[in-house]
Amino acid sequence: MLSSGLPHGAVPKLERPGPLRERVYEALLELITTRALRPGAHLVESELAGHLGVSRQPVREALQRLNTDGWVDLRPAQGAFVHEPTEEEADQLLTVRTLLEAEAARLAAAHTGTPGIAALEELCVTGERAVREDDVDGAVAANAAFHAKVMELAGNAVLAELAAQVGRRVRWYYTPVARQRGAQSWIEHRELIAAIADRDEARATAVMRAHTEHTRRTYHERARESGPGERRG
Image 1 (tube, rainbow, N blue to C red):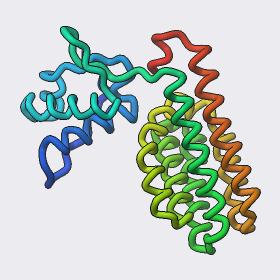
Image 2 (tube, one colour; image 1 turned 120 degrees about the horizontal axis):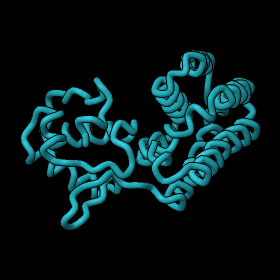
Image 3 (cartoon, rainbow, N blue to C red; image 1 turned 90 degrees about the horizontal axis):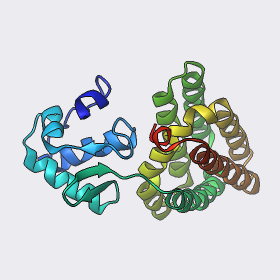
């Protein structure tokens, strides 16, 4: 049940202004991508409406949209459930991520100046602190911010748009392995910063490709080692 499954304080406040159905959609998507609502969780309209302080209608509309977008499965006579990604789905998504982010790293190495390097360094410090404090949510957020900054520094609007389309799903897949990747992930980020600072496009590309491939392999290793129940964690 959602009343026992959602951590205290996990339900985001609905931002105003904006259409209610859009705000409910964003709130539910945030709960899914942060895994406050875990893969396979049963989504009961009345409970979600109660948590969010809205009527059931915008929740129903949001669930239908989440189903269309692949985040929720609507099962006849059973209801709505958070989608459980298959290994093939994860592999395809993370492979595309590698292609996009490797190119972003190359472009960032070609264009980034001192302010951009300083911004990456600051994000790295934040991520390293989160790892030391075993703050998984903080590490996941810092990781997403770091990769978003590299994409921004690349300066390619089309590439950034494509990356944004997969960004939330990447975060969804990264969350279960964030603790396992731990400090090593941020060591790799440091290596990337060094390559970008040296304006070494080939090295930046190689470092980012290896970095994202490490995450992809870790995800699959965890999926194979964990049982069905644990895999939802």
